[in-house]
Image 1 (cartoon, rainbow, N blue to C red):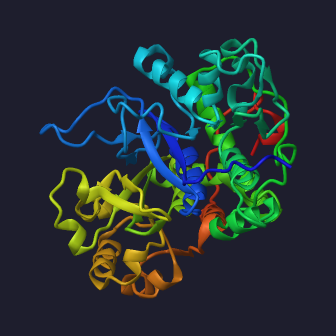
Image 2 (cartoon, rainbow, N blue to C red; image 1 turned 120 degrees about the vertical axis):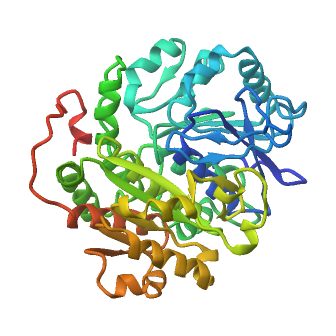
Length: 453
């Protein structure tokens, strides 16, 4: 059993973010640490070149691959940012960061100062380029696993592992493998008193609604490494392939839903193309939105990008809307922890474009449950949506939308709590929207058979 890290204070954890970082990697793992506020003090540190608002105030939000942003706690300009943290977590970062001297200097100093560094997806390649993985075992995304050797020829790469514990550096493969790794890291290194690792893992599963891998060899979709070459065409193919695999990683014991996702993803894409040309999806959230559920459902929708434009929309209470700070009208605070996300748009934007929205997804949010004004505004949007094909929302929200009760929406899908609820809703949505249409011309011959839809 791994030695427990013992501190006479909270463990300081820094999430390292950069422009175009992977939001799912970040938010799904942040939620695990945030579940233990008595053990961890969480910060976000941006390695992007610092930019401030026009009036010289707060640093600007750092944007994810899928659009929404995070306002960092610290930047490269903060003197203590590189030395103040015990644990570093690197969600998938753009490799461009290794060509920025200040970012490289920071990453080397921060990794040297921290007791542990955790990488998710392609970020192991970032550390490999910096020489920090030389002689160590590591893993990374299967999207371009063979290509990882070029970034770290002296690294002992393990394509057979969901994650690798190399002592001070832990690395995981892509998507929800980071969730498994972080959960097992917390259970191994930061349990308390008489807690066993199994106790900690059970608590995480209960809080997030996600089923965790039993160990690094418990891989729901093992297969050969991906091709070494990398192109936009291949990425296009891989992302479409990855959605059912992503769901499988979160619910690898629930084979019925996994099969439904794999079998219905293609027809759903054809359906969207045949009826709309482009499917416009609005994912609505308010303060208190569940981080893991939001990250899962938004990512599944956003990554079906050839046929979907997915926008995150913030609904705010009257009190929150009074704050005149720039981007505040697009901000929501997640549960747990209260971390602030800046979403793509605000409620006014959605109201003005309601007629063009095809799918409306309303995340369960604490602020939305008890705010009659927000629910009325949401009902008005549903009533004005002339092309709305489906509404996905919690039962308590659906019950307070008269337009839905009146049958104004062809398809209504109930959203249950947690990660499992998000995946089940996505599965039902794709299954029930299935129609016959022109077959896709995508060639999946280069994709691992284990991961093809």
